[in-house]
Image 1 (tube, rainbow over the protein chains, first blue to last red):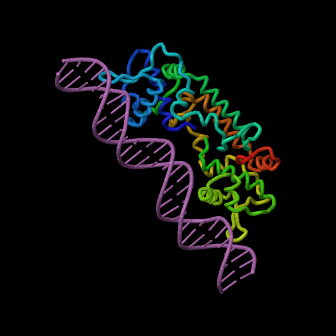
Image 2: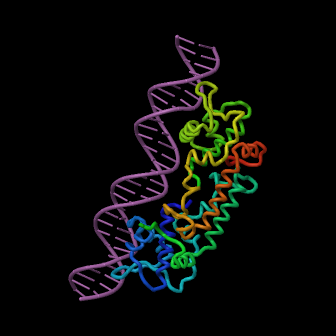
Image 3: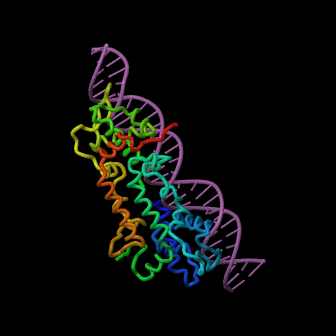
Length: 146
Length: 146
DNA sequence: TATATTTCGGATATTTTTGTCTTTTATTCT
DNA sequence: AGAATAAAAGACAAAAATATCCGAAATATA
């Protein structure tokens, strides 16, 4: 569904958001630790997110990544778009280049319905609201080591 | 969503089914041509499908691939399982190893709903019924070259 | 039986994704 | 200014997915 890079990106964004209201910068090491991802690979992903302006960063001591306090809500779709692109959300389920109502692939109609539901999810859900649920202890970003 | 290999497999199965009622064996070349897929790669996929007993094959002149006439319906899920496995249909949307109602990832509930809808589609739809629609001209497996 | 045909099996090649390492650049603090 | 810190950038490495090639095995037909 999503690439690994995209899963890491979503988790990193949610974690960042869950900490960013403190006007705090979070270092790469902490992010990677908290979302259980390989640090250097996560660095690359954070670079992309920064270039796409989904997060901000500052270098140097006490530097790190953060989301602007007054920033408008970031929808999940924006993160997916930045990392994976939108082809999965727009493309044909069986890979046809031109699949449409008039020239449908064999699963076009059933598949479209589900894909649209996924698109809807991604467009509705915001990083911030998911971060709130995380803060409230209603979800987790990695396994417990109990 | 599905790997390329899996998309080729689904299309190959539907095409085969759409021709197999004639008690006819279809060669690799024709399959690859009709579903617009690379021939050698398709050969590998057909081998897997044969080993998984989703299709039959015979070697030699007038040999090829076919689906037994009296065979029970093959559901899409069986093809997906044979090529991609079921991890996407059972795994967590954000890649957590243990994601559940009690320890959910941030998108667990919304994602599960969509994933279950996809699972339902794959369990309901059969290769044969999709092949019927193809025969009726209600769907296509590749682009027209108009 | 000989030959042509077609799948099977294994080895190999290419591309993409995932992951790592090192150097540079910006920033903070002393 | 100098030292320490942390992200940026680019080169590199490993793994997985995609794709190709070739000899072997099976089968039909002459």
